[in-house]
View 1 (cartoon, rainbow, N blue to C red):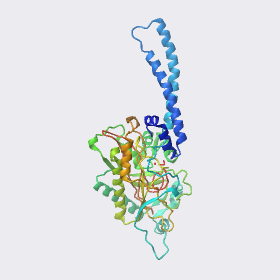
View 2 (view 1 turned 90 degrees about the vertical axis):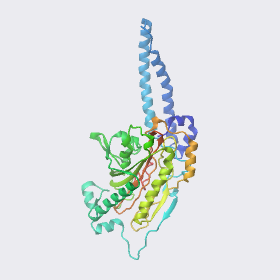
View 3 (view 1 turned 180 degrees about the vertical axis):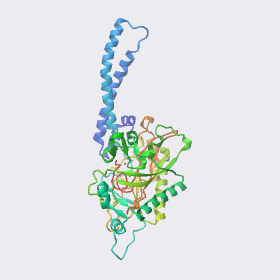
View 4 (view 1 turned 90 degrees about the horizontal axis):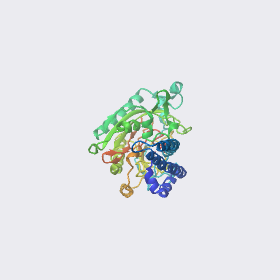
Length: 425
């Protein structure tokens, strides 16, 4: 969510930034809707003030009040419709990208930042994770399809134990680093989905329980971000660091034919996520700390990986301060036979440049913009069914009143490592 007051003050600059995300025309619609509200609002306020009389009204004043009442009713209805239209558009406008994020909308625009280790080579034919798992009865796709349809799997026996052990291991490591473990709800109200930016833009990928007006979350981020809803946090308490474990659900609409083999892009998966509430000024340092933790965890497992940033097609982070670049950490499984190819994403800028840009931008989101998007995402994708996704998000804000920002990266696809969802980030 963008800051409307900042957009009014610098419409050309805001439009140019949003054009890099293909949202220039949507921004024009927003400004037109905003003008419609601003045109009606003063007239409504003027009529409301005319209804306030001192003393007992005269017959002439009573007649005038009836006329004002009728006129006001029509204008209030017009204002309500205009505000609803503005809100509907505002919910769909992405945050402006960070000035350092390179332009790009496809994987071909991506650039690798660094690579650590190399995938091992073998002098015999190598099976991919599904072939190996089916040979030992670790992953059962066929029975899952009978029970739930496509893109579901059973993890069985040693594979199930290994996956659970990875989650438990990741949580234990994060607890050692000061994170509070948490098991968040996976069914949430609409407010939580809007507050984290998943609605309305990602509605097509969300499972909804209509009878109870609840939504199945596609990431622990939703429950963690909503944990302090309507609360004002004490500045001395920050940062608040949480490690959430959850089962997650994704419809994967629009992903037909992409990474369909085995455990990639399934509709149901589990992961561990790092989530942080902190100040805007500390967000860059917190991002670097989270990335360092991710690299440390993968390093302990002895698995080669690479780090890449993300281009401007993805959603941004801090309301009013622009979209900080995101970084992905991907396990180097893509060069193993049978695994789907993956491409690194465009790079992040240097931490110092990010800090300077944040200082230069100055303005922070207003308190009434606290339901903005969450900061960028990262994750670990171990593939082969034994996946531990360590995600993090930063919620940044003014002292005493942290503001919600949008973050993410999941271990298997959307909203994370490879779907390009957030874009939604």
